[in-house]
Image (cartoon, rainbow, N blue to C red; front, side, top):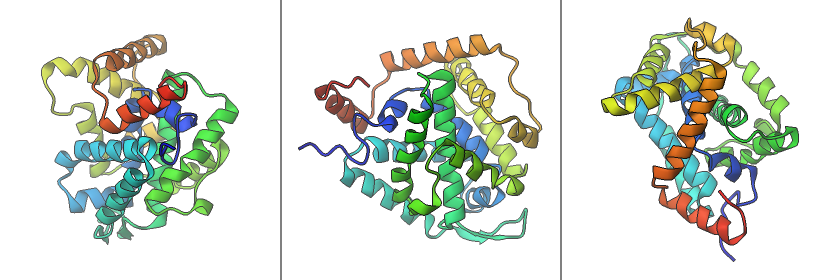
Length: 266
């Protein structure tokens, strides 16, 4: 029997993450994660922030792809790499004066919840909307990804309401900082060829459009002025175009072939 990994063709996770609109969710997640000063401190003090945000996005993308679409050995190896990378990251945050460790379950949970919440928000706004039960199932399934980075089941949200409550419990810690501002500016105007900038501007605007208003206020920013209908049409068209011209990663290509054999279209 083919190893379907921790999720499989019939999972909500495969359904959500086979859609290119997860790019929008990934950018939103980075913007949200950057508002937690202790989460941001590890990047500021252990890397060059202006060069690492895009690298962090790529590493997160590769981990998510391996965790969701890879076989169990591939997913376990990806999780081990993340845990190893986290171990030496520790220090004292210059903004709050608080100590931090990247292995702290509280920080791992923040990163996990921001990812799950953002991927779900992008799916609900720009993809094929999940009904209530499907959305709850997606949140519960993503606990399997959280385990790979060291989280315990009892610490992770098991549904949408639990996810909302967990995200809200962090609000007192969130604040604007130089690191958060650097993250915003780099994601808004990343170094890229001129031809790709209009497409990226659309991706970034879409990501900001699904940010919670209270978090936009922390940044001192407002939602984009682009009409919602135009933004949705643009993201939908961009996602379809990405499917047509993009070369899927080997792990996703293998997953798509497995899904095809089981009558599931990704």
